[in-house]
Image 1 (cartoon, rainbow, N blue to C red):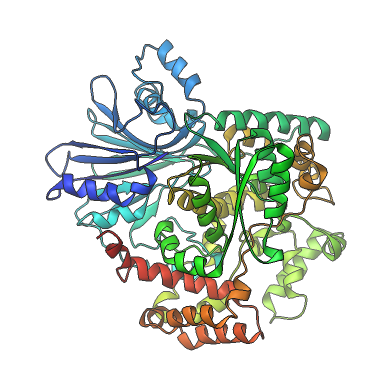
Image 2 (image 1 turned 90 degrees about the horizontal axis):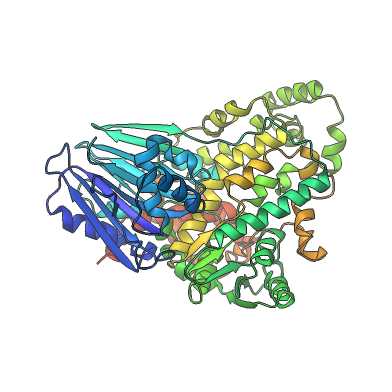
Length: 621
């Protein structure tokens, strides 16, 4: 696990520039660094930098890494779990290896397969390969978006790229400006939901894409996608057996390491199942001193039953608010999922004992674990009305002023395109627009962002449309972003065995009734987990990672911290500050529960103070 950075073109003292860029992400790789510089003109110059966190082949895995004649060079962040299989194929094809690390497999794999390399990989990755003979940069990001990848084109035409945007701050031709179009959708989604980031002109390489860059032209290509079109003929019991076998196999692949491996553990089925299969020496849990916001007792009890050590700690509000600017610095973009905060402290705790952890992200998207995927109670009764009538009623409701039952009718139309945007909806779109200054109201609408995703799966069932949307927006934009950034902030490698191409290949064929059975979400996964876990863990309702921000924001101390941000000159640039204060005051008075809206604005303003007002630059001094 590491971090990479690089750029094309010539700048003054470029060795100093690339070293400073690498130092910005030293938390991703504190063990060692390396650099590559070639070319002497704007047209042929390429500079690469790397920071290493040693996990596999501790002695010989340094980067940048080259092929035999030095004509192909790579910087790579991630882990390739089928690298031994690919290595054998490449040796059979005549390639000679100097190391036993997965990075060298990518170098020779590019020589052998060219642009088809990415589709052969099983793992989590972001990498860039430079082919000096053709003057081509080739890079890729893993299928689910576990590892980040950003790029920026300067006014001079140079390309900057890397694992984290903050490294670009050290390049003289990078100008950190707010993307005026990013704020409107962010207020609804709670994360940066477009390819263009909050930094104007800076983009994410989407998951499951590779790119080539030559002669100033960048071309992106999708190399993998989820396919829900085929359904298994296996019985429910057979599928549960298959899942159990696959989870064991995936955990075995993800545990390969030359350093200590532990696991994150909550009281839920996802991390509990991974932990029970892995059987690590150490597990890690955090919580708050509020009963509703603490699952550490369940985690401690399971660890005791398994006979493994559980490290746990409780986090205070003071700790969370004190760390929040640092959290947003590491996040690179505003992301207001409150669970980022405990995840930061959980990673810190784990990094005191191990270098690698396994975690349960992805199970809810793959096996349908969210409540929003389920239909029960009155909704289930309403769904007995023929679909064409429900769709007609929803069409009429959308044209009428709001009335009691308005959202219920639309939500139960069976057409998720009309209402479902993923697992978070903070500000309804009209409220987001109302609270913004005119300059920032012009960003894309929610449907502008969701429609291209839905258009690819118009033939699928309602459930599968929702899953597909979450896999393409929510999962990489929220869940995996915070998982990577919060763990890497503490030089901790986080691996996610559910988010594996082989796991997905089987899971995508599961029929609806195996995933949601009227009693449970992700039903067949729970049945599989129950082969290893006790009933109370296998069938415990989903709780998430709750954070007591509602209570905090009603206390004078934390109310005043947020008030200072809401009444700042920066807030006045973007928002109607009277409206912000009404949200905050109504919440403190207990007349409204505005905690998520408040937290989302507070998150943006904290990020703004770091990156736009200059606190991030002072961190590097």
